[in-house]
Length: 212
Image 1 (cartoon, rainbow, N blue to C red):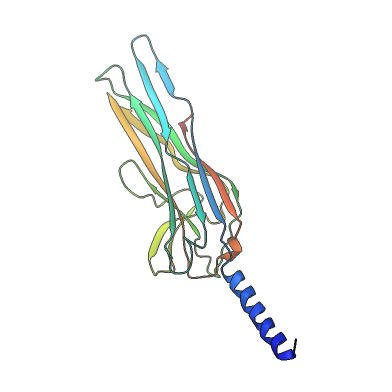
Image 2 (cartoon, rainbow, N blue to C red; image 1 turned 90 degrees about the vertical axis):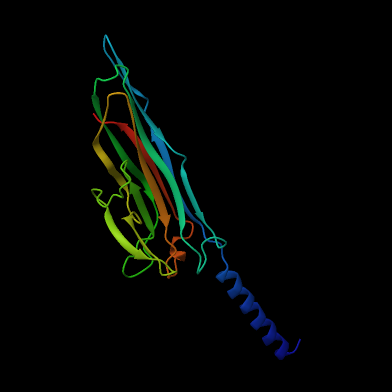
């Protein structure tokens, strides 16, 4: 084989290698499990009140080259935490307190921009339909994705630990009342190279439980 053909084959090999690297599969995994404690029953000689907690399906976000490439949208996972108070003695108003928290046990994500733009956003809506802008320990941020869209939420990109979405929240009823906390996790598709988070993941549990 002459030198000319060797050079041509080498160029083809390099081009194929570059193509393989540029189309490598992403592997961003974001798992938010959900958990609720057993129903709380308050008994007396005349009444039995039920305070029941519920949660939606787990959030499981997996980014690949097919759904998270340049120019594509963000990936969103949704779930909820709920509390239902049912009073047996109608007309007699009762109140209880409960907590909603997000416990992030493992988080391998890193920022990929010098300005530390949020890669993972937590968006929470309270039972009144209002979006939360304050959670102790978390920063509410605004970030622009690769398509120029402005997103807002709590930055959980590198966070670990327990964060209270609601603490000692009061539920009151004289018959039946239900509270729903809607929770979203957004994997933001930034206008940056996010390959540093390949094969990285986040694991957390959304909990609804009676306040002590």
